[in-house]
Image (cartoon, rainbow, N blue to C red; front, side, top):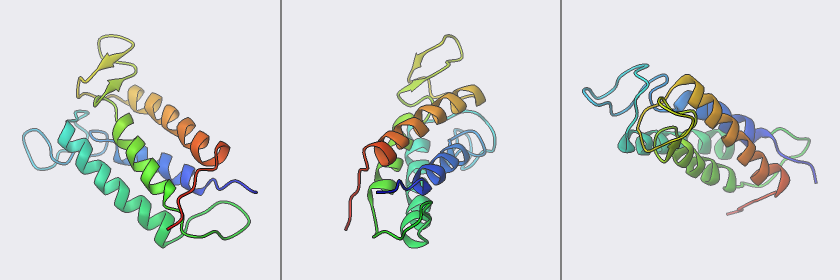
Length: 140
């Protein structure tokens, strides 16, 4: 059985691009949308997770981006697990590594380039564990 690296690659790229506060934050604290403010909030992470789920579902399920030698059935594990991890691992919601004032902070609702990078590495490793090592699938 060959591993499918498509969901991992797509999910990690989307994690970076849709991290609240890096490119944009929707909704922002003072406006509907702000660009590059490096802040986040619970509602912004929820909105970004919904956007993330929609985009990853289109790319993995509808378009069918897969990186291996064969075609597989519609596997919903990738968008569901990736979107849940996106929300949970968004810097500032539950935890942030590194924090602004220390190496590890809880629920500060802030982010930074360093913390987005560290969380992206953790995110990518978890996706590899779920999809490549454990071969988790959900066919509907």
